Length: 399
Image (cartoon, rainbow, N blue to C red; front, side, top):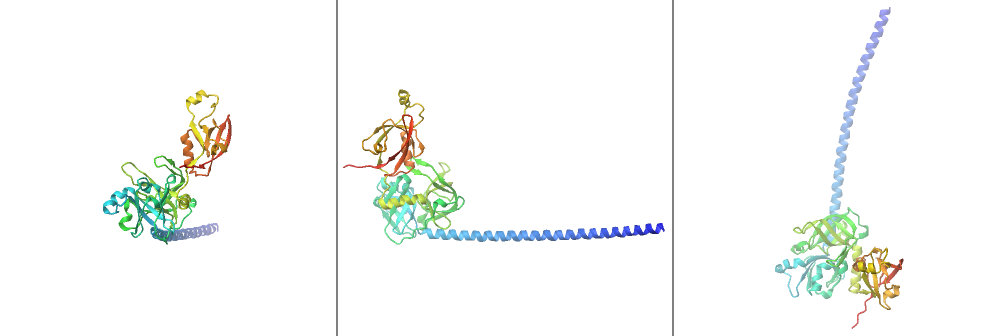
C-alpha cells in the first residue's frame, strides 16, 4: 500500500517536472521570439526615424538654401564695384589691374542713388584728387569726382552720389539683434571679380562674434568698435560691400580682414564688418550735412605729468598715478565755462583712465565725439575729486 502511494507520488512529481520543463521551454522560446520581434521592431523604428530625420534635414537645408539664393538674388542688384583712377583715365582691361589696387565694393542704400562704402576704399580720390568709377549690376558705369563724395575718416565710412532714380536698396536688418551662429552672406568685388560678369560674388558663413572693439587704428586714423565678426570669406576688394543675414537684410558693411601672414593676404576666417545700426547714423549725418563735424575746440591746454614735475612739486602730486595737468585755460572758452582751472589734473575722460595727452585725445576719438557734445572729465583739485562736463565747442575759422 505504501509502495503504491510512493509510486503515485513519484508519478505525480515526474508529470509535474515534465509540465514545468515544457512550460519553461515554451516560455523561453516565446520570450526569445518576442524579444527578437521587439528588437526588430525597434530597429525598424530607428531606421524610419533616421530616414525621417534625414528627410527633415534635407527639407530644412533646401529651405535655407532657397532663402539664401533668394537673398543673394535680391541684393545683388544693389551691389557695385568701385575703382579709383587718375582723372581722364579710362577704365579698361589695360588699366583694370592697376585700378584693382584701389578697388572695393559698395551698396546702394536708398532710391536717390547714394552708395555707401569704406573711406579707405576711396581715400586716394580725396587725397590725390582722382576720380571714382562705379559699376552697377549689369555693367552700367558712373564716373564721379570728389565733389560727390562725403566721408568720415574716423568711422571709415563714405557715401558716393550717382545720378538716377528708383534704385532698389536692400532692406535693413537690426545689427543689435544679430546672434552668434546665425547665417551670414558677404557680397562684393573681391580681386576685381565683379567686372568679369558685372555681378558680385557671394560667400557664406556664420556670425562668429559681435561687439568686438579694436579701438583707434592710428595708421588709418579710424576707430573700429562694436564690430561684427564672420567667417564668410572677405578678401581685398570686398571692403565696402554688404554683409547680409539669411533673409537678405543688410546687417553690416564689410571692412577688413586679419590675414594669415605676410605672404598670404587672403581670408583666414577673421573677417569684420561695421554694424549697420552704427553705420546708418554716420550715413544719415553725411547725407544731411556732407560731413560729420569733429572740428571742435575746448580752450584748454594740457601737459603730460613728467617725472621732473613730480619731483619739483612732490607734495602736489603725492599719491597721484597717471593723468594730465591743465596748463592753460582761455578766457570765455568752453573750459572756463565748465569750471576748469590751471593745475587741475584730469585723470579720466568718459570713464577712461588716462596717462598722457595722447590718451586724452584718443579717448575723444574712440568715443567718436562730435562738435556740440560734452565729454565727462574726472579731475583732481587739491586732492579732491570732481566731475566736470566739458563742451566740445565748434571751432571758429577767421578769414
